[in-house]
Length: 233
Image (tube, rainbow, N blue to C red; front, side, top):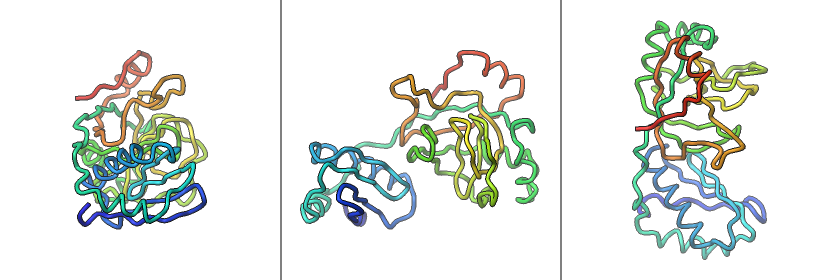
């Protein structure tokens, strides 16, 4: 893996971490997904689970192999970029109207933008799903325009409605369930993002793309009361 060999750190007798000291990118995610697949094949009997972070793979082991064996395995990976990232783009309807976007006016003012400009900037980009975390089904998305980067709230909200679309730091995301949270709420989607009764409980995967499609309050209500399912192109 020329130029992209991760460091391996043993955290506990059953947990270790691979970390890449590079910028977050599609190329890095492609390598992470490929290395995850290779590890699961090579160490199938030893690994319980692998979790992806923006620059890491967290590995839960039955037993950690000899560090030199793992390092040799990583060094022997010549080029893991055999599987291209998904071209699947999920279209997520979002209502950015004030009823669902309590933080949008203040955020737009802080950025010296009109609410309409902020909505346009947020919805004209596509965002790559890197991993799920924080809450079951919470997508960590990469691709937010730098102009919209915003520090998280100093005092988190006690309850954020499921489907709320928010900005926190350099990321945007969607709350899959009702939850406390410290991100700035700029809209809400009528879709369901997590269903524990389904397998898999989420319909998207790391590597997929997300695009946000502005809708009206009337369209939101209509979709909320229907059996509408997310679509991709």
